[in-house]
Length: 117
Picture: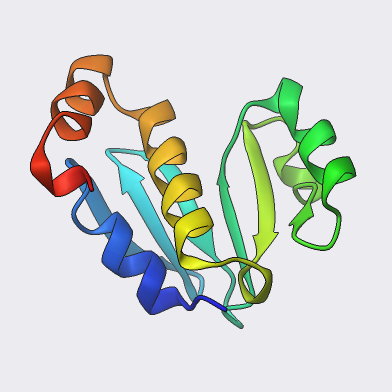
């Protein structure tokens, strides 16, 4: 099981990332674009994910993943239960969500660096 502290540890080293508290939810953003948000009770993590792929993700593993709230369905967004994720999967989800929101050069620079491992 992973926690919001694990999310914070992974996200905080990603270039251009800022952490903010919004309505009792911890969010991680690049400028005005939110790419991760942890629920107030710290059980769910919403993250950037391609709209066209999210139904397949949720259908394939409904224990771990949920569709976004109806108000978020228009965004590239999906949710995961933190208790069902391990550290490796969390890192992959966080980095992939971040990559969707930064310029390709920024992502490539980070992924090619020793700190990306």
